[in-house]
Length: 118
Image (tube, rainbow, N blue to C red; front, side):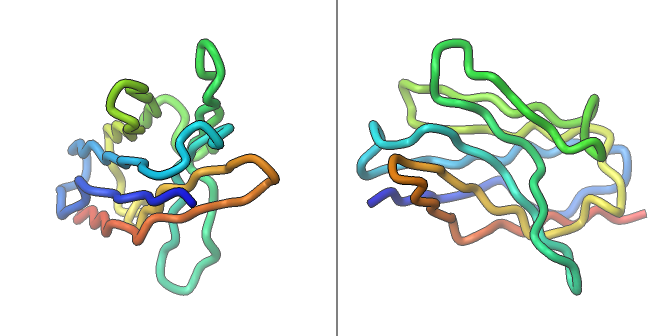
């Protein structure tokens, strides 16, 4: 089992920044990749960014956040971050941390609310 705990959400004005954190615990060695997803009211959950667990940590971003968001990890702290800059009202959503583990098992955090005011 893998447990994920997110933090760092909040209310920010358009153009502002927030940094989300996700701390993983449990069977850490089983994780192949981690990522951030978001779900706005009335919409499906969508991928925001992912980072692999291998050397170098390859990353992948949704087109809507490229150039504004950065995903990173600190292996010593079992933590993945999402730095969000130049936030827009359309970024308002609940942000979920996710881990993809051995056997294609996926784990989710409880989510953290991000609200961007115009």
